[in-house]
Amino acid sequence: MATVLGIGGIFFKSKDPKALMAWYAQWLGMTPHWETGTTFPADKMPGGGYAVFSPFPDSTNSFEPSTQPFMFNLVVDDVKAMLGQIRPSGANVIEKVEASEYGTFGWFVDPDGNKVELWTPPAK
Image (tube, rainbow, N blue to C red; front, side, top):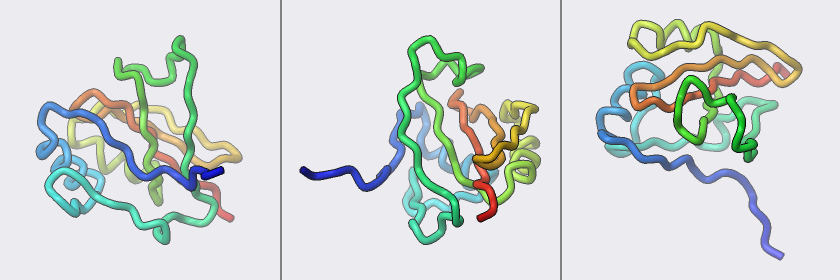
């Protein structure tokens, strides 16, 4: 039987994909590889990093304050520094950072209303 090897991308709708990609480039340093997207080579993933596929119950409030039916997670080198970097953009930065055995997590809502989770994996 064929098996899934990983997550190949995150694709979502935006009223202005070019502007949203430009916002991510400016505030999160995501270098666009084309007008509305970028790539993340596997060799850039830090040790201990991995991709997650996880349906949540329909009743979850984990994606709030966004009203979108999804949330996406970005691996970053420093959650607190990234949140500080994003704060001047006017995005809704959620003033809670959590550290656990899985690493450090922080959240913000982008200009399109998508909740984004930032994750720094624990040091190996």
